[in-house]
Image (tube, rainbow, N blue to C red; front, side, top):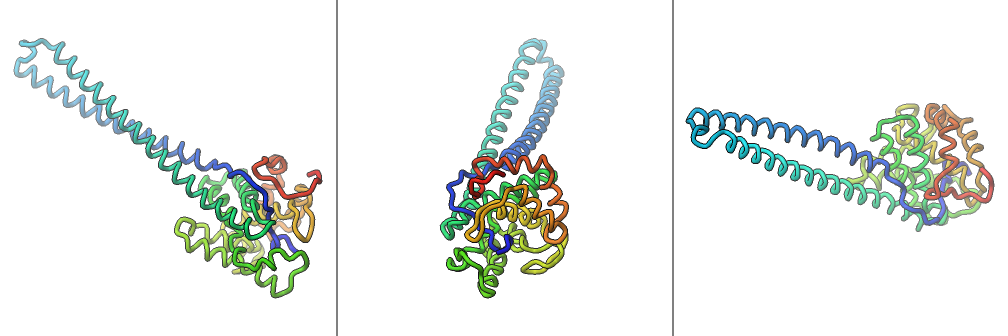
Length: 310
Protein backbone atom coordinates (compact mmCIF):
# COMPACT_ATOMS: atom_id res chain seq x y z
CA UNK A 1 0.00 0.00 0.00
CA UNK A 2 1.48 3.41 -0.93
CA UNK A 3 2.93 5.41 1.91
CA UNK A 4 0.78 8.42 1.06
CA UNK A 5 -2.37 6.36 1.56
CA UNK A 6 -1.63 4.07 4.48
CA UNK A 7 0.39 6.35 6.75
CA UNK A 8 -0.41 5.38 10.29
CA UNK A 9 1.68 5.89 13.43
CA UNK A 10 2.18 3.74 16.53
CA UNK A 11 0.67 3.58 19.99
CA UNK A 12 3.68 4.70 22.00
CA UNK A 13 3.67 6.96 25.02
CA UNK A 14 5.37 10.17 23.95
CA UNK A 15 6.20 13.25 25.90
CA UNK A 16 4.79 16.55 24.72
CA UNK A 17 6.63 18.00 21.79
CA UNK A 18 8.78 21.03 22.63
CA UNK A 19 7.32 24.39 21.81
CA UNK A 20 10.13 26.55 20.40
CA UNK A 21 7.48 28.98 19.20
CA UNK A 22 6.43 29.67 22.76
CA UNK A 23 9.81 30.94 23.95
CA UNK A 24 10.34 32.96 20.78
CA UNK A 25 6.88 34.55 21.05
CA UNK A 26 7.44 35.43 24.69
CA UNK A 27 10.84 36.95 23.95
CA UNK A 28 9.45 38.97 21.06
CA UNK A 29 6.47 40.24 23.07
CA UNK A 30 8.77 40.88 26.02
CA UNK A 31 11.03 43.05 23.87
CA UNK A 32 8.04 44.96 22.53
CA UNK A 33 6.72 45.56 26.03
CA UNK A 34 10.12 46.72 27.24
CA UNK A 35 10.35 49.21 24.35
CA UNK A 36 6.85 50.44 25.17
CA UNK A 37 7.73 50.76 28.85
CA UNK A 38 10.92 52.69 28.10
CA UNK A 39 8.95 55.13 25.97
CA UNK A 40 6.32 55.49 28.70
CA UNK A 41 8.97 56.11 31.34
CA UNK A 42 10.81 58.56 29.11
CA UNK A 43 7.59 60.42 28.38
CA UNK A 44 6.70 60.53 32.03
CA UNK A 45 10.18 61.64 33.03
CA UNK A 46 10.24 64.44 30.46
CA UNK A 47 6.78 65.67 31.39
CA UNK A 48 7.65 65.54 35.10
CA UNK A 49 10.86 67.45 34.40
CA UNK A 50 8.92 70.14 32.54
CA UNK A 51 6.43 70.43 35.41
CA UNK A 52 9.25 70.71 37.93
CA UNK A 53 11.04 73.38 35.89
CA UNK A 54 7.85 75.40 35.56
CA UNK A 55 7.14 74.96 39.28
CA UNK A 56 10.62 76.06 40.21
CA UNK A 57 10.44 79.04 37.85
CA UNK A 58 7.23 80.10 39.54
CA UNK A 59 8.86 79.70 42.95
CA UNK A 60 11.70 81.97 41.93
CA UNK A 61 9.28 84.46 40.41
CA UNK A 62 7.42 84.75 43.69
CA UNK A 63 10.65 84.84 45.73
CA UNK A 64 9.95 81.54 47.51
CA UNK A 65 13.62 80.61 47.26
CA UNK A 66 14.62 83.67 49.28
CA UNK A 67 12.39 82.54 52.09
CA UNK A 68 13.31 78.83 52.18
CA UNK A 69 16.37 78.47 49.93
CA UNK A 70 16.58 76.48 46.70
CA UNK A 71 18.14 73.26 48.08
CA UNK A 72 15.09 71.99 50.00
CA UNK A 73 12.83 72.68 47.04
CA UNK A 74 15.07 70.86 44.55
CA UNK A 75 15.54 67.92 46.93
CA UNK A 76 11.79 67.58 47.35
CA UNK A 77 11.19 67.68 43.62
CA UNK A 78 13.97 65.22 42.88
CA UNK A 79 12.67 62.79 45.52
CA UNK A 80 9.19 63.07 44.04
CA UNK A 81 10.52 62.37 40.56
CA UNK A 82 12.57 59.35 41.69
CA UNK A 83 9.78 57.79 43.72
CA UNK A 84 7.08 58.20 41.08
CA UNK A 85 9.39 56.94 38.33
CA UNK A 86 10.22 53.87 40.43
CA UNK A 87 6.52 53.27 40.98
CA UNK A 88 5.83 53.49 37.25
CA UNK A 89 8.69 51.09 36.52
CA UNK A 90 7.35 48.56 39.06
CA UNK A 91 3.84 48.77 37.61
CA UNK A 92 5.05 48.32 34.04
CA UNK A 93 7.27 45.40 35.04
CA UNK A 94 4.33 43.71 36.74
CA UNK A 95 2.28 44.31 33.61
CA UNK A 96 4.93 42.62 31.45
CA UNK A 97 5.01 39.60 33.73
CA UNK A 98 1.22 39.34 33.66
CA UNK A 99 1.11 39.54 29.85
CA UNK A 100 3.90 36.96 29.54
CA UNK A 101 2.14 34.55 31.93
CA UNK A 102 -1.15 35.00 30.10
CA UNK A 103 0.53 34.23 26.77
CA UNK A 104 2.27 31.19 28.25
CA UNK A 105 -0.95 29.80 29.69
CA UNK A 106 -2.85 30.42 26.46
CA UNK A 107 -0.18 28.76 24.31
CA UNK A 108 0.07 25.81 26.70
CA UNK A 109 -3.70 25.32 26.51
CA UNK A 110 -3.57 25.55 22.74
CA UNK A 111 -0.78 22.96 22.53
CA UNK A 112 -2.72 20.64 24.83
CA UNK A 113 -5.66 20.76 22.41
CA UNK A 114 -3.41 19.79 19.50
CA UNK A 115 -1.83 16.96 21.46
CA UNK A 116 -5.25 15.75 22.60
CA UNK A 117 -6.27 15.24 18.98
CA UNK A 118 -3.09 13.31 18.30
CA UNK A 119 -3.79 11.15 21.35
CA UNK A 120 -7.35 10.60 20.17
CA UNK A 121 -6.02 9.00 17.00
CA UNK A 122 -3.94 6.67 19.17
CA UNK A 123 -7.15 5.36 20.69
CA UNK A 124 -8.54 4.82 17.20
CA UNK A 125 -5.66 2.76 15.83
CA UNK A 126 -2.63 1.11 17.42
CA UNK A 127 -0.42 2.41 14.59
CA UNK A 128 -1.47 6.04 15.00
CA UNK A 129 -0.59 7.21 18.52
CA UNK A 130 2.29 9.67 18.55
CA UNK A 131 2.57 9.64 14.77
CA UNK A 132 1.44 13.26 14.44
CA UNK A 133 4.11 14.36 16.90
CA UNK A 134 6.89 12.76 14.90
CA UNK A 135 5.59 14.26 11.66
CA UNK A 136 5.40 17.61 13.48
CA UNK A 137 9.05 17.18 14.45
CA UNK A 138 10.10 16.49 10.86
CA UNK A 139 7.95 19.38 9.56
CA UNK A 140 9.38 21.79 12.12
CA UNK A 141 12.96 20.74 11.35
CA UNK A 142 12.48 21.07 7.59
CA UNK A 143 10.74 24.44 7.76
CA UNK A 144 13.30 25.82 10.21
CA UNK A 145 16.17 24.72 7.97
CA UNK A 146 14.59 26.67 5.10
CA UNK A 147 14.65 29.86 7.20
CA UNK A 148 10.94 30.40 6.74
CA UNK A 149 9.32 33.09 8.92
CA UNK A 150 8.57 31.92 12.42
CA UNK A 151 4.81 32.05 11.81
CA UNK A 152 5.06 29.64 8.86
CA UNK A 153 7.31 27.23 10.76
CA UNK A 154 4.88 27.24 13.65
CA UNK A 155 1.89 26.75 11.32
CA UNK A 156 3.50 23.71 9.68
CA UNK A 157 4.35 22.14 13.02
CA UNK A 158 0.88 22.67 14.47
CA UNK A 159 -0.95 21.54 11.33
CA UNK A 160 1.20 18.38 11.29
CA UNK A 161 -0.27 17.40 14.64
CA UNK A 162 -3.72 17.54 13.07
CA UNK A 163 -2.94 16.27 9.59
CA UNK A 164 -4.57 12.83 9.97
CA UNK A 165 -7.48 13.84 12.20
CA UNK A 166 -9.91 12.87 9.42
CA UNK A 167 -9.06 9.19 9.99
CA UNK A 168 -11.28 9.35 13.06
CA UNK A 169 -14.17 9.07 10.61
CA UNK A 170 -12.82 5.96 8.85
CA UNK A 171 -13.86 2.46 9.85
CA UNK A 172 -11.51 0.59 12.17
CA UNK A 173 -11.77 -2.42 9.87
CA UNK A 174 -10.17 -0.37 7.09
CA UNK A 175 -7.54 1.32 9.23
CA UNK A 176 -6.32 -1.90 10.79
CA UNK A 177 -6.68 -4.19 7.78
CA UNK A 178 -3.38 -6.07 7.38
CA UNK A 179 -3.78 -6.89 3.69
CA UNK A 180 -4.43 -4.98 0.50
CA UNK A 181 -7.40 -2.62 0.47
CA UNK A 182 -10.24 -2.89 -1.99
CA UNK A 183 -11.10 -0.07 -4.38
CA UNK A 184 -13.97 0.95 -2.12
CA UNK A 185 -11.74 0.94 0.96
CA UNK A 186 -9.10 3.05 -0.79
CA UNK A 187 -11.87 5.47 -1.71
CA UNK A 188 -12.80 5.75 1.94
CA UNK A 189 -9.16 6.43 2.87
CA UNK A 190 -8.95 9.16 0.22
CA UNK A 191 -11.80 11.01 1.90
CA UNK A 192 -9.91 11.59 5.14
CA UNK A 193 -8.21 14.90 4.18
CA UNK A 194 -11.54 16.54 3.41
CA UNK A 195 -13.11 15.06 6.55
CA UNK A 196 -10.17 16.26 8.62
CA UNK A 197 -10.37 19.75 7.15
CA UNK A 198 -14.06 19.83 8.01
CA UNK A 199 -13.35 18.87 11.60
CA UNK A 200 -10.59 21.45 11.98
CA UNK A 201 -12.55 24.19 10.24
CA UNK A 202 -15.46 23.73 12.66
CA UNK A 203 -13.19 24.62 15.60
CA UNK A 204 -12.48 28.41 15.63
CA UNK A 205 -9.20 27.92 17.50
CA UNK A 206 -7.88 25.58 14.80
CA UNK A 207 -9.72 26.72 11.67
CA UNK A 208 -6.65 28.42 10.17
CA UNK A 209 -5.01 24.97 9.83
CA UNK A 210 -7.85 23.63 7.67
CA UNK A 211 -6.15 24.29 4.26
CA UNK A 212 -2.98 22.43 5.31
CA UNK A 213 -4.99 19.46 6.56
CA UNK A 214 -7.11 19.35 3.40
CA UNK A 215 -4.28 19.61 0.88
CA UNK A 216 -1.38 17.62 2.35
CA UNK A 217 -2.04 14.78 -0.15
CA UNK A 218 -1.98 17.03 -3.20
CA UNK A 219 0.87 16.31 -5.61
CA UNK A 220 3.28 18.94 -6.86
CA UNK A 221 2.41 17.95 -10.45
CA UNK A 222 -1.32 18.31 -9.78
CA UNK A 223 -2.15 14.60 -9.65
CA UNK A 224 -3.08 14.43 -5.98
CA UNK A 225 -6.32 14.71 -4.03
CA UNK A 226 -8.83 15.99 -3.06
CA UNK A 227 -8.69 19.09 -5.33
CA UNK A 228 -5.85 18.42 -7.76
CA UNK A 229 -3.88 21.51 -6.78
CA UNK A 230 -0.35 21.80 -8.17
CA UNK A 231 2.90 23.60 -7.46
CA UNK A 232 2.75 26.61 -5.21
CA UNK A 233 -1.03 26.62 -5.33
CA UNK A 234 -0.71 23.98 -2.61
CA UNK A 235 -0.45 25.69 0.80
CA UNK A 236 3.14 25.88 2.06
CA UNK A 237 2.35 24.04 5.30
CA UNK A 238 0.74 21.21 3.31
CA UNK A 239 3.83 20.89 1.07
CA UNK A 240 6.09 20.69 4.11
CA UNK A 241 3.89 18.17 5.91
CA UNK A 242 3.60 16.00 2.79
CA UNK A 243 7.36 15.37 2.81
CA UNK A 244 7.53 14.94 6.59
CA UNK A 245 4.54 12.58 6.50
CA UNK A 246 6.05 10.22 3.93
CA UNK A 247 9.51 10.28 5.53
CA UNK A 248 8.10 9.11 8.83
CA UNK A 249 5.75 6.62 7.14
CA UNK A 250 8.62 4.97 5.25
CA UNK A 251 10.85 5.01 8.33
CA UNK A 252 8.17 3.33 10.48
CA UNK A 253 6.69 -0.15 10.65
CA UNK A 254 3.21 -0.62 9.23
CA UNK A 255 0.73 -3.48 9.41
CA UNK A 256 1.53 -4.34 5.77
CA UNK A 257 5.33 -3.78 5.70
CA UNK A 258 8.42 -3.08 7.78
CA UNK A 259 10.30 0.18 8.08
CA UNK A 260 13.19 1.28 5.90
CA UNK A 261 16.27 3.26 7.00
CA UNK A 262 15.89 7.02 6.94
CA UNK A 263 18.55 7.44 4.24
CA UNK A 264 16.63 5.04 2.01
CA UNK A 265 13.39 6.88 2.77
CA UNK A 266 15.01 10.17 1.75
CA UNK A 267 16.18 8.56 -1.49
CA UNK A 268 12.64 7.39 -2.21
CA UNK A 269 11.32 10.90 -1.64
CA UNK A 270 14.05 12.39 -3.84
CA UNK A 271 13.11 10.08 -6.68
CA UNK A 272 9.68 11.71 -6.92
CA UNK A 273 10.78 15.28 -6.26
CA UNK A 274 8.95 17.65 -8.57
CA UNK A 275 6.31 15.02 -9.21
CA UNK A 276 4.88 14.33 -5.77
CA UNK A 277 6.77 16.84 -3.67
CA UNK A 278 8.07 20.41 -3.75
CA UNK A 279 11.71 20.17 -4.98
CA UNK A 280 12.79 22.99 -2.67
CA UNK A 281 11.57 21.15 0.42
CA UNK A 282 13.01 17.84 -0.77
CA UNK A 283 16.34 19.58 -1.35
CA UNK A 284 16.38 20.64 2.28
CA UNK A 285 15.72 17.19 3.76
CA UNK A 286 18.45 15.68 1.58
CA UNK A 287 21.00 18.12 2.98
CA UNK A 288 23.42 16.20 5.20
CA UNK A 289 23.22 18.65 8.08
CA UNK A 290 19.43 18.40 8.15
CA UNK A 291 19.58 14.63 7.71
CA UNK A 292 21.89 14.43 10.70
CA UNK A 293 19.28 16.15 12.86
CA UNK A 294 16.47 13.95 11.54
CA UNK A 295 18.54 10.79 11.86
CA UNK A 296 19.34 11.56 15.48
CA UNK A 297 15.72 12.07 16.46
CA UNK A 298 15.32 12.79 20.18
CA UNK A 299 13.69 10.14 22.36
CA UNK A 300 10.61 12.36 22.56
CA UNK A 301 9.94 11.42 18.95
CA UNK A 302 10.76 7.72 18.60
CA UNK A 303 10.16 6.31 15.16
CA UNK A 304 8.30 3.02 14.97
CA UNK A 305 10.90 0.83 13.35
CA UNK A 306 12.36 -2.54 14.17
CA UNK A 307 15.93 -3.08 15.34
CA UNK A 308 17.42 -2.02 12.03
CA UNK A 309 20.30 0.42 11.84
CA UNK A 310 19.50 3.75 10.24
